[in-house]
Length: 131
Image 1 (tube, rainbow, N blue to C red):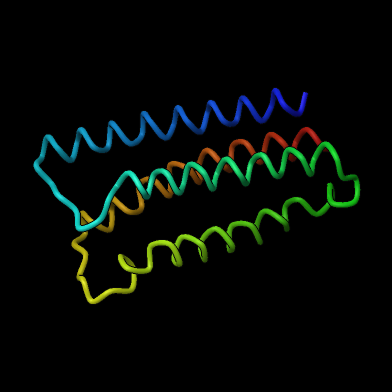
Image 2: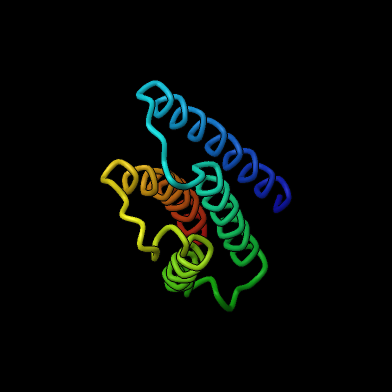
């Protein structure tokens, strides 16, 4: 059961990663927009981080009775960790003297919100299963 759920999350994250990236890239190409960063790396980081987070919560949900009641708080902590890691990996974009346009900033936020939505949907399903 656990392996099946993790495989489902892997396929779902991969599907969202590929479809989201190519739609985003196609729109940017159509409007001839170029960014000072690699969009693929942003999507890849978000996809992998979402998969790790969701798989971890599935494992905790099924294997540990001790943390079942605290999973909502663990998720909040995991979100903070994800933001810190994102800032660490992409500090050259976020903290450089480079001024990002509103379109550049929006392109950074779109994958974050796409994967945040996916994450929340999966985590809510896991939490509701535990009630």
